[in-house]
Amino acid sequence: MIDRLLPIIKKEFRHIRRDKRVLAVLTLVPAALLLLNGYALNFDVNHIRMAVVNQDKGAVSREFINSFVSSGYFDYVQELATSEEATQMLDDGHVRMVLVVPSDFSDHLQANESASVQILVDGMDANSATTIVGYSQAVVLQYSQKIVMNNLAKIGRANYIPINYEGRIWYNPELKSAKFLVPGLIAFILAITAVIATSLSIVREKERNTIEQINVSPVHSLDFILGKLIPYALISLVAASLVLLAAYLLFGVVIKGSVFLLFGATLLFIVAALSMGLLVSTISDSQQVAFQIAAIVSMVPTIVLSGFVFPIRSMPWWLKILTNITPAKFYLVILRSILLKGVGIAAFWEQLLYLVLFATVLLTISTLRFKRNIG
Image 1: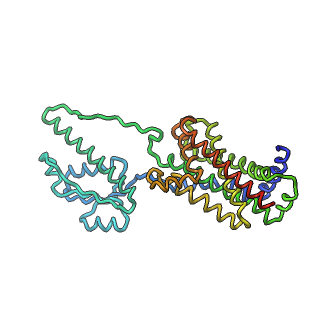
Image 2: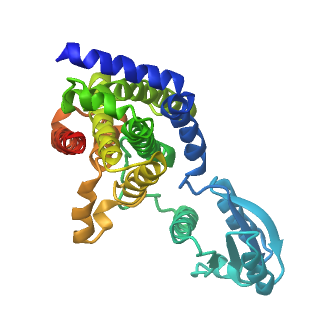
Image 3: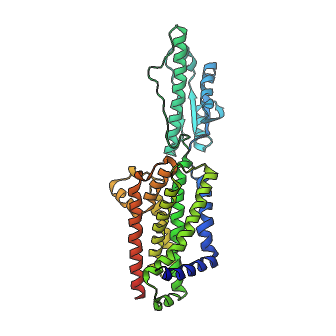
């Protein structure tokens, strides 16, 4: 079988070497897409532009306002005179939050009474608005605890906290969204480039009428399909290495788990993605049609159904079932487990099994379709 495969593999490598566009799509484009999308896709909420309506003007209110700035989450923009100006600033998008301090704020606190403040947040982006409210609550709670401690000290009581907890965040202690998104970007980029590149391979043979030479040759359908797949798999594996290197250099994504497992799983995913492209090429008659179909079957499921952007656990049951049509869903679990958690194969062997099953089924269908077409 190797003797039959080698001529096809050499022939396909010659095609790839001559077609600089395909070579660029497989090698340079993935790293470039990671660079662009990695910086563009960022769910971190920081440097929140904040305006203040300080009707109190006292030293206590200024100290309270400074507690927001010193937290590191808020950027003080300017002080406003009226609530109407605050509304205008929010409408124009100049600020994302306005802190309104009433005129009796200091008086209530100095009298050991509860004081109220108002926080106005731009809620067009619901996730960001929820995060901003959470940051604000944390700042207010910390300032309130400081006041309680000072009051206890004045009456001679020891300072204490009834419940003390120590929270630890595993896998991503810096809470950087890039470390969560970059593995998804890797799966997304590899899926697109692999499917599109291979979808054009057999169609190119059809358009150049070289498929007739295959028909009259002793090459079996499986040999032809595997001979088409192996060169792209090897080049895509090199591209995956470049993408992982770029992820480390640009976003600090370190491989915490086994490198051997990572590249083994990546090779399985690449083969699964390439098998999708080969199937597309067997049902298309032109490179234009193949490109359009490949873009649809690779991009849409990977973005919507893989868990890359939208969490699968939040989807309705029927959509959860539909997510199984994309191998990126299972590769993403493997990728995040190895890169972020550093766990072993016991944590994701089911995902590996699915990738093997997915690739086997699609390669079988591609082989049968190609055999029927040339028969």
